[in-house]
Every structure is written in C-alpha cells, then in structure tokens.
Length: 413
Image (cartoon, rainbow, N blue to C red):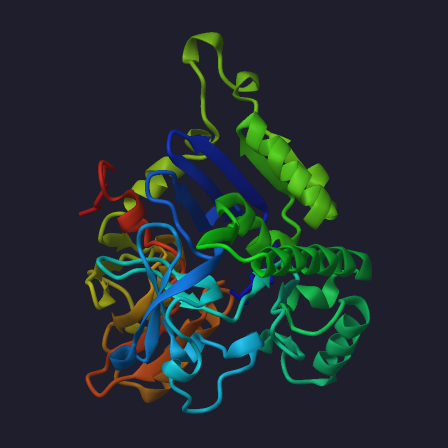
C-alpha cells in the first residue's frame, strides 16, 4: 500500500449508482485508473480487525483467524508478530508466536479469492497521500522512486521533525508537499492509530476496528498528491462526505470537490444525464471486460485471465515495425493491468524482435510504464522462450470478478 502516482491527475470523477460506487482518474482526458466498490461484493482490503485465532495450521506455518465476517482469514508466519508486537525472529514458526484463542490485531492485505479467505498481516499500515503510517515500525523509510541522492536523507529528517513518533513510509509526493499538509496528514493518521490501539486494548472481538478506504478515498489517496484540478462527484451526499474528509485529511483539495449537476447540461426531455455517461466512461469500462484491445498503430492485445496468471499476446497486425508495435503495447499493457486490477503473475508474448538491443529497449520502456502503478509491479525480463515475465501485487478484487455477472461485455473483432 505504499505506491503513489507522482504525475498530476487532471480530474477525478466519482459516481454512485445502485450497488456501485466508482472513481475514475483521467489524465489528459484519458482514463488511467479506476476504483470500484460493489455493495453486494464488498472488499475487505485495508480493514483492521481485532480477530481471534481459531487454530494454528502447522503445515501452512500460519494461523486461521476469525474476523467475525463468516470467513476466516489466513495469517502467515511471515506476516505475524510475537507478544506485544515484537518482530518475528528469522525462521521462527507460527506456533512460537500465537496460540489458539488469542486475540490478535490484523489487517487484510488481500481479499478472499475462490474458496480461500482473505490474507492477513499484523504489520498494520494506514495510508495517506504523502505518508503511510506503520505504527509498529521503528524508522522512517523513503520511497525508492525518489532516487538515491542526498535528497532522500534530507526528506527523512524533515519527516522526523514533522511527524510524531516512528514508523513512517514517505511517499514520492511528499518531496514537494508543504510542511503544513504533511503535519496535518501525519496527525490524522496518528490519531487513527491511537483509536485502533485503544479499541484493541479494550478487548472483545472478533470485531472491525477501522474499515479500509472506500473507492473515492482510494482514488484521492493514490492520486491526490498530484493535486487534481477537479474532483467531480455525481452524488450530493457523497460530495459532502468527501468534502468533509478533505477538510480533515487533505485541506488543499476541499475546494476542488464539486457536485455534478446534470440539469445544467441536459434538456428537460432528455432525462437525467449521468457524469460517466457524459464522458463515455461506461462504454470504456465495458471494453475492459473483453479480451481484445486495439492499438492505434494497427496492432492489438489479447488479454486472457486464468486462475494462475494473466497472459497477454501482442499482435502486430498487417503493418508495423515490431519494435514500434511492442513499445506502444508496453504502455497500453501497463494501463490495462491497472484498469483491470490484474494481480499475480503476468506473462507477455511480444512480437518477435531479432535485435537484442531492441529487446533491452522494450524491457526498459515496460519498466518505466509500470513505475507509477500504485500496486507494486515488477518486470523480471525475458524467459528462455522469449516471454516477458512480470508480477503485480494483488489489490482488491479484479475488475472482471467485480463486474462480470450481469454486465455487457464489448469485444472488438
């Protein structure tokens, strides 16, 4: 949960209709990120629970934890801590850390998939636009996206002077943020942690202590550091709610929250025109449920999801230099993975290139294209079969799983 998009997002459009609450990020008028909550398929990502250990699974080196939601979560020994939150020693097994019946403070780091329950961690993190509070941590860590120069050290010192206590992850947007905004955000995050800690100390459970940010707030957290020019909300109550949140957490964005009034745009006989209809976003979201993605240069992508991985095939079409097609495909692949919220292993079959220098240029371009992805994405290079191997951290439910049932799928031939 530490990624951030440094580049400015020009607009964030938010609507609520039926069971869906959606936030679309448009950069230069183009859809680049999409956040969706489905009331009938709620995500637990980022939720903090006071859970109770149901049983120790020695074979998995983990523990099943009752969250009070009807489906237990799995806490791996790698994500567990000892008594009083002490860090796990290298090689220490789960049975030395936890016991059956024990209450434990956990956070959901990945939603349930299939028959598997949510994945849990005891390393709680509370995300903000500029800072992530890791209250059980001991130091200040600065985003690798800020390079390796002396600026990193100076920024860490600055945060130590502004933010209370230790346990802070400094996001890339903090480098240009004024001290006042950093102080306001660190205070809000620290206050949220104190509330969680106090509730946990009162005991009880299993119970939810703090929900993770919803779709509109996720969009503001991940892209608000770029100071979007407008935040347009197609729901009056939600607009007021977000304005209040901004007043507390992002005061520089409060005046940018605008309620969308379709009456100013539609004639009385036209009926109510919705914000996403006006920008033709519904049609674009429908195409994300299909498999084929055309490229402007004449090529195309075919994106197939399996249970184990996402496979992308790049087609050159009737014309086009292989390198040019692949470079265009690399940028679009990065965008599609974000919009579809693909997670796990990704394998890409690019158009064959004979020049080794071209292959290196393509890998560099793909690595740059995924740099700003809020979900940690790693490009590993070419396999012996000439396939590019990648991984993308799972964050919430994939778009196809969230919207697949009862949605129209538009596939371009």
